[in-house]
Length: 119
Image (cartoon, rainbow, N blue to C red; front, side):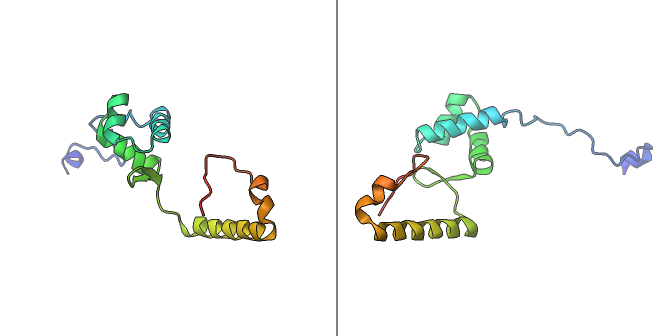
């Protein structure tokens, strides 16, 4: 109201005061991700201390940018319906391969990451 009385009828947002989020950049996000991958049980407080940023900012990056949650160690959040269906289909295919030739199953299985196979 006071702006209109001064003759300012601009509809553009004025720059906000306060500190900009300079910490949340791709380099910091990658560093946090690397620290978590090196030690899945690392605390957000420890990460903040190593990188010299606030614990709250680390928590925000972990939850919002990396989409992870804490469950005794950092893990990706719950799977959505499509990912669950894909995993079920893959598991069924692996079970079929195992039933066809159990002796040759593991020697023909190839993984591309550090994923473990559990019974």
